Image 1 (cartoon, rainbow, N blue to C red):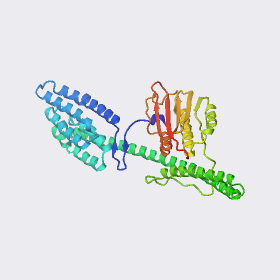
Image 2 (cartoon, helix red, strand yellow):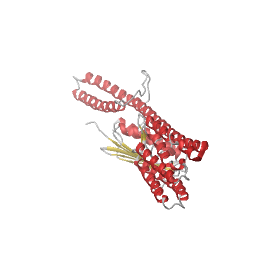
Image 3 (cartoon, rainbow, N blue to C red):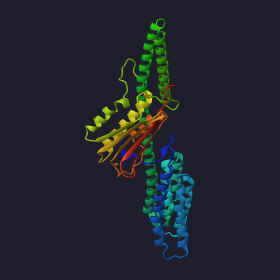
Image 4 (cartoon, helix red, strand yellow):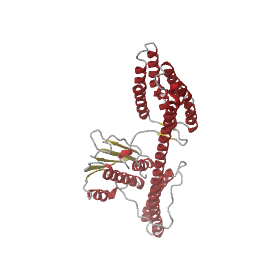
Length: 393
């Protein structure tokens, strides 16, 4: 799990269509609008300094293009058409501004459309943006002017395609991380259920042996069987949730292969002792009783703490202290892991695309819980999970 990769952003759907988060859309608008105003706006002011009649109209068209960029992620085709028309208007008013510069806002929108829109739309938009190329040739720019314009348009479209491919690779990597984590969870649940059923078989045999002579002992064995059955059903519900309708082939457990029982919060001291051997100071605080937790919740809490500590060791620059807090109540278990380091990019990264975070989120989600991972205002990084507890009744 790399902290440097925890950047907020959009998601890419199955068809490649990208939907940016509101924050990312605003950042894109501010950046692209600033570029258009800085480059095209300056060119217009310089070219129209001596033409007081055309300059105000050209400035209004430039401002309109910058404002239209606000909706380029929602309606890129409409914004592209509007900015192309406005850019041609600027070029008609002030021919001193090159066609490439006048259509700068349209090129920015073409890049966004190429990155987020359906491929057939971006291909059509690329062809449409190439149509004005002869105008650059006819206006006196010659082959060089037309070539520069075509290169600028193709470069904008290519940049969008590169961004699309990058986001699709990121999405595929996150999907693989979810698949691997679900396969790991399924193996652990298999071990838990197998152990529970083995105990139930032993209890049933014991109850049959003493059913006539010692009925009270037989009743105790039957109650133990009931409790074990309820626990096993809970673990099976977790497994079915992991292999729901949206799941693919997550791997299989080879028959006849015995695995060690999964770790639990009872072995938390062993885990933190291992971290201490690296020179890290680890403080552990417990509240409530962790024994008797459903095995799935116990495993999820342990794995989340384990991954958070691993993240601190690998990616928390300058960290020398980490605090682990486990609070167990009747309705939920809360775990918090906080370090005093900083992220690779100065602590500004937000939770996002790290494979470790994907695994921790999947752990929390499959037991019906929630997880939050983010840098702290005063420095450091915190992972906090809330895992609901459904005890056998």
